[in-house]
Length: 348
Ligand code: NDP
Image (tube, rainbow, N blue to C red):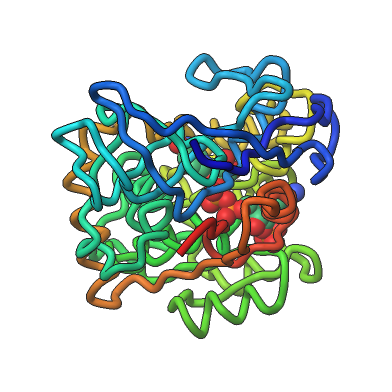
C-alpha cells in the first residue's frame, strides 16, 4: 500500500454560482498497489482544468456526454502520467500514458486498456503539451477551424478569436494564420495578454474587452469586415463581433464561457437582433464538438506536433504546482488567471 492525495468535490456552486476553491477538498487515503491482470499503477505528472468541468459541478450537466461529479468522490479529467508498475502488456513500466478520465490523485491503479500510450518525442519531452497544444485543446482549435471555419488560402479572410489568450484561442488564432487568413484579431481580458498575442503569437492585433470599446476597435482592426469568428466566450462580446461579420461568413461555435455560471441551456439563446443578423447575412453558426471528430484525431495530432516542434505554433502555459491547488487553479482559469493552457504539475 501507499499513502496518496486525492481531490474530491466538497460542495456544488449551484447552477448560477461562481465556483470557489472551497468547492474542492484534499484528502489523504491509502492505495492498495497490488495489481490485477490488465491493471497498471500510474504516477500522475500533470492534470488539466477545463471550462467544461463547470458543468460537471452541477447536479445535472446539461450534456449527455458529461457525467456530473459526485460529492465526496475523487474528481477526474484530462491527465498524463507514467506507468510505475504494470500487469498490462500494452502499457509496460516506464511508458507515458494519458486519459480524459484521469483521477485527481497523486498515484492511481487504472485499467491499462483505458489509457492512451503517447510518444514523448511528439512534444520534445514537454509532456504537459499532451493536455494542451498536442492534446484536446489543440485538436479543438485545429478541427474547429477546419470543420467549421471555411478558411481558404488566397481569399483575403479576416479571423477574429474570442478567449484568444486561452488554451484553445491561442492555438486557433495561430492556425488561422497558418491556414491562410491575412488578418487574425484576438479579444481577451488584459493588456498583458494582448501584448503576448501580438508580440509572441503573431496575431495582427488584440483587443482588451475589459478596457477597450470592442465595437470601435473591431472596426479599426478589421477594415474589410470579419469572415471567420472562433467563438470561445459568447455573450455580448460575441454579439458585437457577429454584428460586424460579412455576408456568407462563418462562426465556429466552440464554447460560451461567459455563460457557464448561469442557469441557461447550451448553446445559450441569442438576442433577436443577433439572430436576425445571422439570417440576413447568411452566416453559418453550427455547434462544434471536438468529441464528434475523434476519428480525425491521430492525423491532426501529428500536424499539431510538427507545428509545435518547428516553432510555427508557439505554446503558452500557466503552470501551478501541487495537487492541493487543483481547485484554486480551476477557479483562477474560469476568471482569466491563465495565459495559454492552465496546467497543474503533480510530480516530476
Ligand atoms: P481557456 O484557457 O480559454 O480559459 C478560459 C478563459 O476564458 C479565461 O482565461 C478567460 O480569459 C476567459 N473568460 C472567462 N470568463 C469570461 C467572460 N465572462 N467573458 C470573456 N472571457 C471570459 O479555456 P479553454 O481554452 O480550455 O476553453 C475555451 C473555450 O473552448 C471554452 O468555452 C470551452 O468550453 C471551449 N471548449 C470547447 C470544446 C469543444 O469541443 N467545443 C473543447 C474544449 C474547449 P480572459 O482573461 O480573456 O477573460
